[in-house]
Image 1 (cartoon, one colour):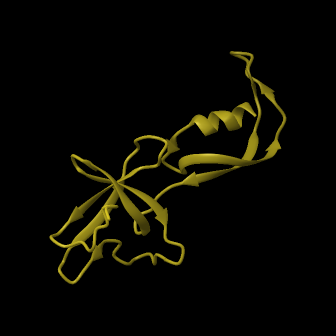
Image 2: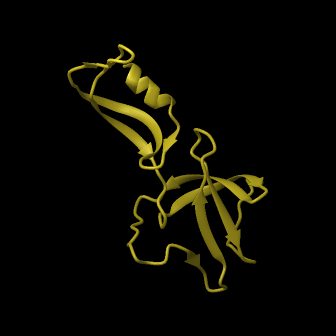
Length: 129
């Protein structure tokens, strides 16, 4: 269980993205003693929920705060949207507004830093009545 707790405390890897939560411990193999330290290493197979945004994915977002290089948005993945490899992952509207994204490692809230370019990007809801 210590291994699952250690992965829960780990933030992110480049191969798998952000570690969100362990789901199942599948198998623990036979332990092998390390000669130099006396530690015992066990091969372990487990399942984990991860979050890794990929270029071209589209998310429903809402505004959180401004940042010197863009804005922070909270996001959920769009359920019925499918990305087709080879298509241009950048959104262009009729007025040539452009929305691109890139992700940065910040904290466990899985924030993505994006940029917005253009004069008109659609309606904005500020939460005011």
